[in-house]
Image (cartoon, rainbow, N blue to C red):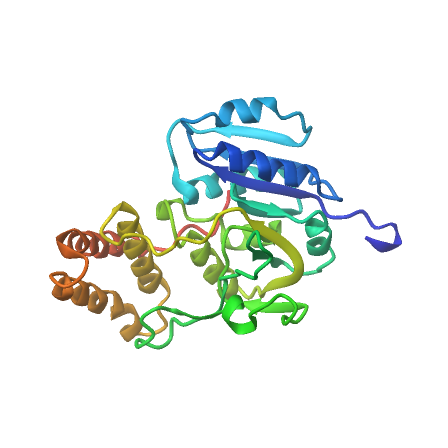
Length: 304
Protein backbone atom coordinates (compact mmCIF):
# COMPACT_ATOMS: atom_id res chain seq x y z
CA UNK A 1 0.00 0.00 0.00
CA UNK A 2 1.06 3.61 -0.59
CA UNK A 3 2.46 5.99 1.96
CA UNK A 4 4.31 3.31 3.87
CA UNK A 5 1.12 1.86 5.32
CA UNK A 6 1.63 -1.87 5.98
CA UNK A 7 -0.53 -4.05 3.78
CA UNK A 8 -3.25 -6.15 5.32
CA UNK A 9 -2.23 -9.70 6.15
CA UNK A 10 -3.79 -12.55 4.16
CA UNK A 11 -4.50 -16.19 4.91
CA UNK A 12 -5.49 -18.40 1.98
CA UNK A 13 -7.83 -21.29 2.83
CA UNK A 14 -7.68 -24.24 0.43
CA UNK A 15 -9.91 -27.30 0.75
CA UNK A 16 -8.80 -30.43 -1.09
CA UNK A 17 -9.95 -34.00 -1.52
CA UNK A 18 -8.26 -36.60 -3.73
CA UNK A 19 -7.00 -34.14 -6.35
CA UNK A 20 -3.31 -34.09 -5.53
CA UNK A 21 -2.05 -33.03 -8.95
CA UNK A 22 -4.50 -30.12 -9.17
CA UNK A 23 -3.54 -29.09 -5.65
CA UNK A 24 0.14 -29.12 -6.56
CA UNK A 25 -0.50 -26.77 -9.50
CA UNK A 26 -2.53 -24.44 -7.27
CA UNK A 27 0.31 -24.31 -4.73
CA UNK A 28 2.73 -23.54 -7.57
CA UNK A 29 0.43 -20.66 -8.52
CA UNK A 30 0.32 -19.33 -4.96
CA UNK A 31 4.12 -19.55 -4.76
CA UNK A 32 4.33 -17.48 -7.96
CA UNK A 33 2.21 -14.60 -6.61
CA UNK A 34 4.05 -11.30 -6.72
CA UNK A 35 2.80 -10.61 -3.20
CA UNK A 36 3.02 -13.72 -1.08
CA UNK A 37 0.25 -14.63 1.36
CA UNK A 38 1.10 -14.75 5.04
CA UNK A 39 -0.33 -18.25 5.40
CA UNK A 40 -1.86 -20.94 3.21
CA UNK A 41 -4.10 -23.17 5.30
CA UNK A 42 -4.74 -26.43 3.44
CA UNK A 43 -7.57 -28.57 4.74
CA UNK A 44 -6.97 -32.10 3.47
CA UNK A 45 -10.35 -33.81 3.75
CA UNK A 46 -8.89 -37.26 4.54
CA UNK A 47 -7.68 -37.74 0.96
CA UNK A 48 -6.86 -41.33 -0.01
CA UNK A 49 -4.64 -40.45 -3.00
CA UNK A 50 -1.07 -39.07 -2.90
CA UNK A 51 -2.13 -35.69 -1.47
CA UNK A 52 -0.10 -36.20 1.76
CA UNK A 53 3.04 -36.85 -0.30
CA UNK A 54 2.45 -33.75 -2.43
CA UNK A 55 2.03 -31.60 0.67
CA UNK A 56 5.04 -33.11 2.42
CA UNK A 57 7.24 -32.24 -0.57
CA UNK A 58 6.35 -28.53 -0.49
CA UNK A 59 8.87 -26.21 1.15
CA UNK A 60 6.99 -22.88 1.28
CA UNK A 61 7.18 -21.35 4.78
CA UNK A 62 3.56 -20.21 4.62
CA UNK A 63 2.08 -23.70 4.21
CA UNK A 64 0.07 -25.11 7.10
CA UNK A 65 -1.73 -28.42 6.65
CA UNK A 66 -4.64 -29.88 8.58
CA UNK A 67 -5.63 -33.44 7.71
CA UNK A 68 -9.11 -34.32 8.91
CA UNK A 69 -10.03 -37.77 10.18
CA UNK A 70 -12.97 -37.94 7.77
CA UNK A 71 -14.20 -36.14 4.69
CA UNK A 72 -16.03 -33.04 5.95
CA UNK A 73 -17.09 -32.02 2.45
CA UNK A 74 -16.22 -28.68 0.96
CA UNK A 75 -18.53 -26.92 3.40
CA UNK A 76 -16.99 -28.51 6.47
CA UNK A 77 -13.50 -27.90 5.15
CA UNK A 78 -14.13 -24.21 4.52
CA UNK A 79 -15.79 -23.79 7.90
CA UNK A 80 -12.74 -25.32 9.59
CA UNK A 81 -10.31 -23.29 7.49
CA UNK A 82 -12.07 -19.98 8.08
CA UNK A 83 -12.12 -20.75 11.81
CA UNK A 84 -8.33 -21.30 11.71
CA UNK A 85 -7.76 -18.13 9.71
CA UNK A 86 -9.95 -16.09 12.02
CA UNK A 87 -8.28 -17.49 15.13
CA UNK A 88 -4.89 -16.79 13.54
CA UNK A 89 -5.71 -13.09 13.41
CA UNK A 90 -5.13 -12.45 9.69
CA UNK A 91 -6.83 -9.38 8.23
CA UNK A 92 -8.19 -10.99 5.06
CA UNK A 93 -9.25 -14.54 4.34
CA UNK A 94 -9.09 -15.80 0.74
CA UNK A 95 -10.97 -18.99 -0.05
CA UNK A 96 -10.35 -21.32 -2.97
CA UNK A 97 -10.82 -24.90 -4.12
CA UNK A 98 -7.90 -26.99 -5.30
CA UNK A 99 -8.80 -26.67 -8.99
CA UNK A 100 -7.95 -23.01 -9.61
CA UNK A 101 -4.70 -21.11 -10.18
CA UNK A 102 -4.38 -17.34 -9.56
CA UNK A 103 -2.59 -15.03 -11.96
CA UNK A 104 0.66 -13.71 -10.44
CA UNK A 105 -0.85 -10.29 -9.67
CA UNK A 106 -4.23 -11.58 -8.47
CA UNK A 107 -3.59 -10.95 -4.78
CA UNK A 108 -2.17 -7.48 -5.46
CA UNK A 109 -5.31 -6.53 -7.38
CA UNK A 110 -7.58 -7.71 -4.58
CA UNK A 111 -5.57 -6.04 -1.83
CA UNK A 112 -5.81 -2.72 -3.71
CA UNK A 113 -9.58 -2.81 -3.20
CA UNK A 114 -10.69 -1.25 0.09
CA UNK A 115 -13.78 -3.45 0.37
CA UNK A 116 -14.87 -6.10 2.86
CA UNK A 117 -16.04 -8.76 0.40
CA UNK A 118 -14.38 -9.43 -2.95
CA UNK A 119 -14.36 -12.09 -5.63
CA UNK A 120 -11.62 -12.90 -8.13
CA UNK A 121 -13.03 -13.47 -11.62
CA UNK A 122 -12.58 -16.92 -13.13
CA UNK A 123 -11.69 -17.87 -16.65
CA UNK A 124 -11.03 -21.24 -18.27
CA UNK A 125 -7.67 -22.46 -19.55
CA UNK A 126 -8.30 -20.86 -22.93
CA UNK A 127 -8.90 -17.44 -21.34
CA UNK A 128 -12.69 -17.48 -21.78
CA UNK A 129 -14.68 -15.79 -19.03
CA UNK A 130 -16.47 -18.44 -16.95
CA UNK A 131 -17.48 -16.49 -13.87
CA UNK A 132 -20.82 -17.91 -12.77
CA UNK A 133 -21.26 -15.92 -9.56
CA UNK A 134 -24.73 -14.41 -9.59
CA UNK A 135 -25.43 -10.77 -10.25
CA UNK A 136 -29.07 -11.60 -9.52
CA UNK A 137 -30.11 -14.30 -7.06
CA UNK A 138 -33.88 -14.06 -6.77
CA UNK A 139 -35.39 -15.06 -3.43
CA UNK A 140 -38.31 -12.67 -3.92
CA UNK A 141 -40.36 -14.14 -6.76
CA UNK A 142 -41.75 -17.70 -6.52
CA UNK A 143 -41.78 -18.13 -10.30
CA UNK A 144 -37.97 -17.93 -10.45
CA UNK A 145 -37.50 -21.71 -10.55
CA UNK A 146 -33.73 -21.26 -10.55
CA UNK A 147 -32.95 -18.32 -8.25
CA UNK A 148 -29.76 -17.47 -10.12
CA UNK A 149 -31.28 -15.41 -12.92
CA UNK A 150 -28.14 -13.52 -14.03
CA UNK A 151 -24.41 -13.99 -13.63
CA UNK A 152 -21.16 -12.29 -14.59
CA UNK A 153 -20.54 -14.58 -17.55
CA UNK A 154 -23.94 -14.02 -19.16
CA UNK A 155 -24.12 -10.31 -18.29
CA UNK A 156 -20.78 -9.41 -19.86
CA UNK A 157 -19.56 -12.25 -22.08
CA UNK A 158 -15.88 -11.32 -21.88
CA UNK A 159 -13.57 -9.93 -19.24
CA UNK A 160 -12.82 -6.95 -21.47
CA UNK A 161 -16.50 -6.04 -21.53
CA UNK A 162 -16.73 -5.92 -17.73
CA UNK A 163 -16.47 -2.71 -15.73
CA UNK A 164 -13.67 -2.66 -13.17
CA UNK A 165 -16.03 -3.99 -10.49
CA UNK A 166 -19.34 -5.84 -10.68
CA UNK A 167 -21.62 -6.18 -7.68
CA UNK A 168 -22.58 -9.75 -6.83
CA UNK A 169 -25.48 -11.36 -5.01
CA UNK A 170 -23.73 -14.67 -4.44
CA UNK A 171 -20.23 -16.05 -4.68
CA UNK A 172 -18.27 -19.26 -5.16
CA UNK A 173 -15.64 -20.32 -2.68
CA UNK A 174 -13.20 -20.21 -5.59
CA UNK A 175 -11.58 -16.84 -5.12
CA UNK A 176 -13.88 -15.23 -2.54
CA UNK A 177 -12.07 -12.93 -0.10
CA UNK A 178 -13.42 -11.27 3.02
CA UNK A 179 -12.04 -9.27 5.89
CA UNK A 180 -12.06 -10.81 9.35
CA UNK A 181 -14.73 -8.31 10.39
CA UNK A 182 -17.16 -10.10 8.10
CA UNK A 183 -16.55 -13.37 9.94
CA UNK A 184 -16.86 -11.58 13.26
CA UNK A 185 -20.24 -10.20 12.16
CA UNK A 186 -21.87 -13.21 10.44
CA UNK A 187 -20.01 -16.26 11.76
CA UNK A 188 -18.43 -19.17 9.92
CA UNK A 189 -19.56 -20.90 6.73
CA UNK A 190 -22.16 -23.53 7.60
CA UNK A 191 -20.60 -27.03 7.56
CA UNK A 192 -24.00 -28.73 7.44
CA UNK A 193 -24.27 -28.10 3.68
CA UNK A 194 -21.44 -30.64 3.11
CA UNK A 195 -21.23 -29.81 -0.61
CA UNK A 196 -22.92 -27.11 -2.75
CA UNK A 197 -24.60 -23.83 -1.69
CA UNK A 198 -22.47 -23.20 1.40
CA UNK A 199 -20.92 -20.29 -0.51
CA UNK A 200 -24.33 -19.01 -1.61
CA UNK A 201 -25.56 -19.16 1.98
CA UNK A 202 -22.53 -17.20 3.16
CA UNK A 203 -23.04 -14.50 0.54
CA UNK A 204 -26.71 -14.12 1.47
CA UNK A 205 -25.76 -13.75 5.12
CA UNK A 206 -23.07 -11.19 4.31
CA UNK A 207 -25.38 -9.09 2.16
CA UNK A 208 -28.15 -9.19 4.75
CA UNK A 209 -25.63 -7.93 7.31
CA UNK A 210 -25.02 -4.90 5.09
CA UNK A 211 -21.86 -5.95 3.24
CA UNK A 212 -21.56 -5.44 -0.50
CA UNK A 213 -19.71 -8.02 -2.61
CA UNK A 214 -17.63 -7.02 -5.62
CA UNK A 215 -16.21 -9.11 -8.45
CA UNK A 216 -12.93 -7.49 -9.47
CA UNK A 217 -12.36 -7.68 -13.22
CA UNK A 218 -8.56 -7.63 -13.14
CA UNK A 219 -8.19 -10.26 -10.41
CA UNK A 220 -7.73 -13.31 -12.64
CA UNK A 221 -8.26 -16.86 -11.44
CA UNK A 222 -7.85 -19.72 -13.93
CA UNK A 223 -10.01 -22.80 -13.56
CA UNK A 224 -8.12 -26.03 -14.27
CA UNK A 225 -11.27 -28.07 -14.92
CA UNK A 226 -14.35 -27.46 -17.01
CA UNK A 227 -17.58 -26.71 -15.15
CA UNK A 228 -19.71 -29.85 -14.69
CA UNK A 229 -22.37 -28.65 -12.30
CA UNK A 230 -25.17 -30.40 -14.21
CA UNK A 231 -24.80 -33.49 -12.07
CA UNK A 232 -26.94 -36.59 -12.22
CA UNK A 233 -29.85 -35.52 -10.01
CA UNK A 234 -30.57 -39.16 -9.30
CA UNK A 235 -27.11 -39.66 -7.77
CA UNK A 236 -25.64 -38.71 -4.43
CA UNK A 237 -24.66 -35.21 -5.55
CA UNK A 238 -28.21 -34.67 -6.77
CA UNK A 239 -29.48 -35.23 -3.25
CA UNK A 240 -27.23 -32.49 -1.89
CA UNK A 241 -28.09 -30.12 -4.73
CA UNK A 242 -31.80 -30.47 -4.01
CA UNK A 243 -31.44 -30.43 -0.22
CA UNK A 244 -29.22 -27.38 -0.10
CA UNK A 245 -31.20 -25.40 -2.68
CA UNK A 246 -34.32 -26.09 -0.62
CA UNK A 247 -32.53 -25.07 2.59
CA UNK A 248 -31.56 -21.70 1.09
CA UNK A 249 -35.22 -21.09 0.19
CA UNK A 250 -36.49 -22.14 3.61
CA UNK A 251 -33.94 -19.94 5.35
CA UNK A 252 -33.91 -16.86 3.19
CA UNK A 253 -37.03 -16.81 1.04
CA UNK A 254 -38.39 -13.28 1.32
CA UNK A 255 -42.05 -14.26 1.42
CA UNK A 256 -44.22 -17.29 2.12
CA UNK A 257 -44.58 -18.20 -1.55
CA UNK A 258 -40.83 -18.35 -2.08
CA UNK A 259 -40.42 -20.40 1.09
CA UNK A 260 -43.09 -22.78 -0.26
CA UNK A 261 -41.33 -23.22 -3.61
CA UNK A 262 -39.32 -26.30 -2.55
CA UNK A 263 -42.55 -28.18 -1.97
CA UNK A 264 -43.73 -27.35 -5.49
CA UNK A 265 -40.39 -28.35 -6.99
CA UNK A 266 -40.42 -31.63 -5.08
CA UNK A 267 -43.98 -32.37 -6.20
CA UNK A 268 -43.11 -31.66 -9.83
CA UNK A 269 -40.05 -33.93 -9.67
CA UNK A 270 -42.08 -36.80 -8.18
CA UNK A 271 -44.93 -36.38 -10.68
CA UNK A 272 -42.55 -36.23 -13.64
CA UNK A 273 -40.22 -38.97 -12.40
CA UNK A 274 -41.64 -41.63 -14.79
CA UNK A 275 -40.59 -39.35 -17.67
CA UNK A 276 -37.28 -38.03 -16.33
CA UNK A 277 -35.00 -38.94 -13.47
CA UNK A 278 -36.87 -42.08 -12.45
CA UNK A 279 -37.42 -43.38 -8.96
CA UNK A 280 -33.93 -42.52 -7.79
CA UNK A 281 -34.41 -38.79 -8.40
CA UNK A 282 -37.86 -38.94 -6.80
CA UNK A 283 -36.35 -40.58 -3.72
CA UNK A 284 -33.62 -37.95 -3.64
CA UNK A 285 -36.02 -35.05 -3.70
CA UNK A 286 -38.29 -36.58 -1.03
CA UNK A 287 -35.31 -37.18 1.26
CA UNK A 288 -33.95 -33.73 0.43
CA UNK A 289 -37.02 -31.75 1.40
CA UNK A 290 -37.27 -33.47 4.76
CA UNK A 291 -33.60 -32.87 5.48
CA UNK A 292 -33.80 -29.26 4.29
CA UNK A 293 -36.59 -28.53 6.75
CA UNK A 294 -34.23 -29.57 9.53
CA UNK A 295 -31.73 -26.95 8.27
CA UNK A 296 -34.10 -23.99 8.58
CA UNK A 297 -32.41 -22.67 11.72
CA UNK A 298 -29.73 -20.15 10.84
CA UNK A 299 -26.13 -20.95 11.82
CA UNK A 300 -24.57 -19.13 14.79
CA UNK A 301 -23.49 -15.55 14.19
CA UNK A 302 -20.75 -15.79 16.80
CA UNK A 303 -17.32 -17.29 16.16
CA UNK A 304 -16.56 -17.45 19.88
